[in-house]
Length: 204
Image 1: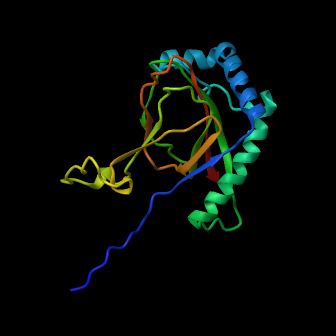
Image 2: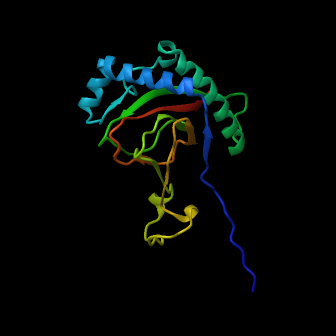
C-alpha cells in the first residue's frame, strides 16, 4: 500500500529586518510625541477601552508629519511587492498600495485583542521598540471557524500543525501577512513601552 500527504493552501508570513538604528530612533521619538499630542487619538483610546495609544482612528498623514514614516513606507513597499510575488498574486495592471498607516504604543499591562483587517489584502507591523519581556504577536489557524468537531492539537505538535503560533519580534522586525489572518498581542509584561507601526495594503 502506498500513500502520500499533500500540503495545500499554505498560510504565509513574511519576515524581514530593517536594520537602521537612526530610523528606529526617529520612529520611537515620533511615537512618543504623538502619544502626548494627539488629543483625538487619546480620546478614541479612552472611549473604546484601548490600552495605551494608537493613531489608527485619528491620523492618516504620518509621512507628512514625520519624514521617518515616509522613509519607512518606501521600504515597506518593496517588501510588500516581494511578498505579493511569492504569493503569486495576479494584479493585472494594478498594484498593492498602502491605504492605512498607524502607530501603536502599548504600555505595561496593555494588549491587543484578536482581530483581522477587513477590506485589505496585505497587513503588517514594523516593530520600533521591543523591550525585554514585551509580548509577541500570536497568529491563529484561519481554519478554526470551519473545524466543527476538530480535536485539540498535541502540546508538542509541529509548528505548522499548531492552532496558535507566536512570533517574537525584535526592534527592526517587519512582519507581513494576508489580511484574513486573525492575530492578537497578549498582555505586555514589560515595564517599558512596546512601540510598533501597523499598516494595510489594498489592490488599486
